[in-house]
Image (cartoon, rainbow, N blue to C red; front, side, top):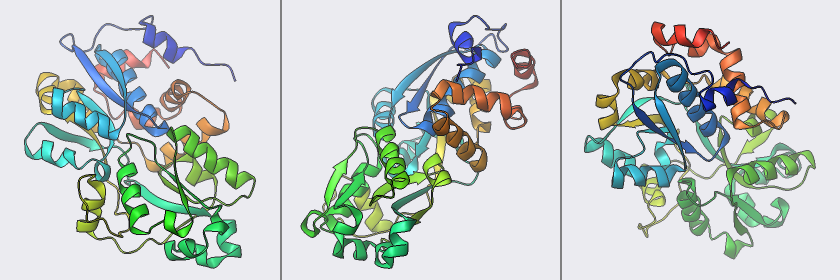
Length: 320
């Protein structure tokens, strides 16, 4: 597949129009280390650079790293796609007035799961529950695939693993080095019809392209889940995952310093179906994040054109 040049040219400044907002200065955006997070940050970067004339810096990051950086340094200016359930420090910063929610990253919110392939449950219905898996670890390959370092779900899964005594029940807890390898392991297992037991989230191409069963962990308990999120809390227990608010966050200083850029971020909400479809395209075509950003901008103009001002849109129209 030939890489389209639009995004690359924009990044070099070769296509940079006259700034829609001559006062827009430097903007830093945390880019999460998973596909939808990269797309979200990339779209923001393109629109801010080409539409508003901002000088944008992308900061590779993750959930816990980005929120810790804001707490310590008041940077980056923008955190694209922050999973609030996995970042308890966010609420403290919001209460202190240091950060504000700009928008929901997804129109219908997001989900978190423990999953097994549907073909396993068809043969062994007991694998639809965590208790059934603990009693039959060999049926899922004797391994639980958990989150990489830096992901907030790492803390929750470590707490749940301990609460269920996974290792004592014959399950190795395997922490992937990245979201890409974790997702690739899911796809490989499903296509080869192999046993697999994993944490994953949505919207993602893996959930859109394959049939996975949501393992019943137990009822959601807010206090237990809060403790499971906190690496300093010793009273871990069993709780299912709650509905997952995923937001685009900015520092209060940024919102006051760059009101037009803040207004754009406040409008950036991806329709779940559009994001899932885009991620499936990204996976099927072995595309880069940049190529997925270009595809979204070219095929979903009806969505993102409503995010920008008329002046910014005039700058962007000539690029498509």
